[in-house]
Length: 310
Image (cartoon, rainbow, N blue to C red; front, side, top):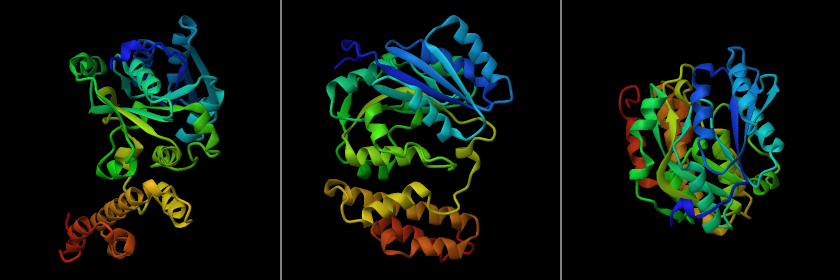
């Protein structure tokens, strides 16, 4: 199925902005080049580096750009502000240092048309660093095989590795609002996964194997690059609490438990690298972690090495 066969245009893109002056122009251009864009909503989260003024420059020449301003409150608060300001049927997210490749919104529209019951859509992505123009030129989506699919075993697949990320995701806006809590505010990591998990528990997921977004990894001070895990992330703690309630969707119980085990053990490994053996053991030697026996054994053996070597 080709992405060009649909004309769905009610897609807004929400872009949180905080001190990304050097990257915002390329990000905006990659959005404006998309077919099917309804509106780009940039939420300036208290920037102090002149990035917001660059957005205003673009907005004067393109009515599809709307900028909202707020005091610094974090990326989740900025995304939530943008979602609530949108009136579109679907909302996609792009961080201000990432890029869309040509055809991203068309592919999302095609997924929404083919899988109308889904509420969470995503494409594959690729990491990049350096010059945006070179990265775009080196990643030609036109040479890729166009494949899409539903993802009924979302949590089992996610346990093996993420197949999309925040800047390659689009959600059905009504389904997101029905969650009540949108992106949890005040959290530094995993706040996006919290939303994907809760949507996947309630609604089908659809994904494309095409690489149609680029994730920048060379930004100084990036939270994901600079923050070491200090334990199990809140998004997994809340998932575990939902599992314990007894009314968790039966088709996802096995996958969610496996994913929890993987993240218990990943957090344990990280704590071991930091020399926090007691905290690591509190995660590794649990029934939850042991539900993934092969991975558990590999992590458990690290406790026998001096200093818990990686």
